[in-house]
Image 1 (cartoon, rainbow, N blue to C red):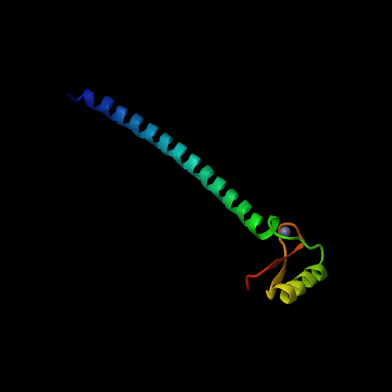
Image 2: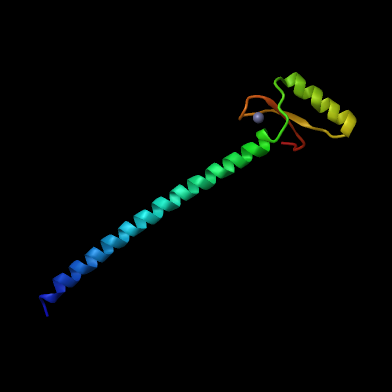
Length: 95
Ligand SMILES: [Zn+2]
């Protein structure tokens, strides 16, 4: 009876170790999945804030376009410097 115990413990330890290894894999794949989602969000944000918009090379151009929209479309647009492309875009969002 007594000789069985240590080997049973050994088995438990081995099981425990392998379960830790499994958790390690889970955490790893989970964190890379989170990174992927973060990347997707970033590119979606970029697409929304930059790629899908008209780009103006200078503030003056953007101001002129905003003025045109105010007159022709009756829309008040704000201009902002883009952190992605360094150009200027228009947005209807008030910050
Ligand atoms: Zn941009």
